[in-house]
Length: 230
Image 1 (cartoon, helix red, strand yellow):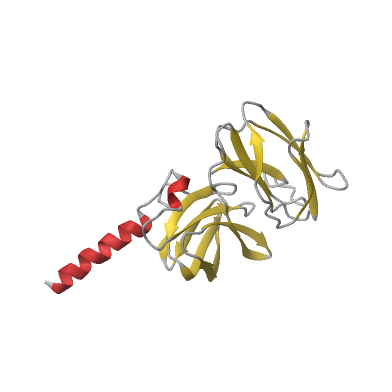
Image 2 (tube, rainbow, N blue to C red):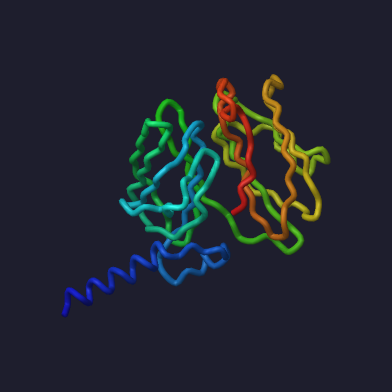
């Protein structure tokens, strides 16, 4: 009888840990169990998919290929020091990463996977409390290879980041909704020129991910940007 009870308890705990794909971000802060939440973003140019594991438990669903520029939304996971491992696929090649990360209970994190010779991680603790009604919020993450710093601004200057350094994760800024922002991204030498239109939704939370590599001659792998909605 006792082995059966243990098996049931383990099953319940597994569901509580990994069956909670919450769409209500506010609810993550009020979780009744001692958990943290993590989202994962693939910023590895040329990667056609990733498998991500926390303490050997796969984080992404089978339907989530996690190609370059895509993300896994916030998911509840273990707290404390965890083993964080992944495999990135590129054609017939595979690259692996394994290391240790620390997740504090009730905190919410993003883990950005990028490449600098080998696969590397950039971890951020995220403030994803919903903005006030009629507002949205946006942050900038610069993982564009071979670009030391960037300017990111809109025509009306409501968005104005003048010195976003490589591997910077900015704080969130508040934005008015019901308007379209024409974002311009450039470097000091004006070698990089990216334009992007962005129209935030009510109480939306967004990351502008700058990705790719300035030196890449492969189509689709140069410096580009993508808005991720959390």
